Length: 470
Image: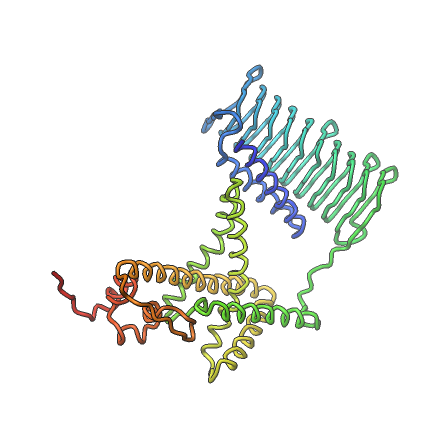
């Protein structure tokens, strides 16, 4: 059952990856998405059967020989992977060359320089590589990503096709919808339902037929060629892709967009600080802390999506992954606001209202700067990792301090907690002291701070004499 759950997630992943490629109109990225899927497939648990067949040859050929029948999921890894027999389960193959000429009654997950599917497949086909060729009947859908993708005349994809590549040729029958992203697309086969695609050049040959609508996004009207004899039963919709205008500063809409984004960030930050004052992070006091925060931010920015995907591989982990994704999105959105707040602290701030105005002005300046062509994306990346790192470090400190305070309250049940209200919110006095370096060492020795802070504080400022006990 686990492999069925994984297959569901994997299919969704490739579908989203292909659609993302379609959205950004970068076919080469499709190969990366498909390849990432195939590599993740190697981490999959056993199939519905009790065990799995694992075959590996570092330099040689690993195969399921003709006449051989395996009633299990099969994992193949080597220089060349061949399936010529019958596999009554899923096939996971990673090699320089993958060739399927036998029968696979489950799904196929493959990553190779060259992938050839010429046998019968009962489930879905997921393939990523330099050259992908499908010459078979597929009972499910085909998710194909590569430099050259070919679906031959005798092929049949019962539940649809999702293609991404530099050159894509669909000559067979697609039982449902066809979605593609390609530099060059040639449709000479049949599609029972709709075709939705993005490309630089799209051709529907005289032998091609579309049972539903043909909707294409291309750079110009001349990029689409529908030959005489081609059949399109529904509507033909051609959207002209607008080229990116690097002179956005000349249009009023750009300024309204930046202003709306700044107001949304500022409003969200004010609401959160009002509801949870302790979430407001302190500004780093040294370049060392800045580099530390940027390091944490980089790890959080890159690793969190991977962790979310791995957690989502199990059905139980999907809700956790969704919650983690929501937190990740909020932190990413607020990271720019955090940097603007730090910049505002450098300006004269006689009162709270002036601090808010300075933060808004700093936020507008940052949003304008990161919109500058060429240099803007790099600066935007630095802003995101710095702001997210500050938030992650601060949340970690709050968690550690609260844990230490609760431990100290447990060990000293007679101690009372006196809540106070400061600029950072209403939090216990003991925790507030440790977050105020200017007061912590004048009001209390490190021994009175919550557990979890004492050792690091003493090692940084070993100015308090040791206190003998016993």
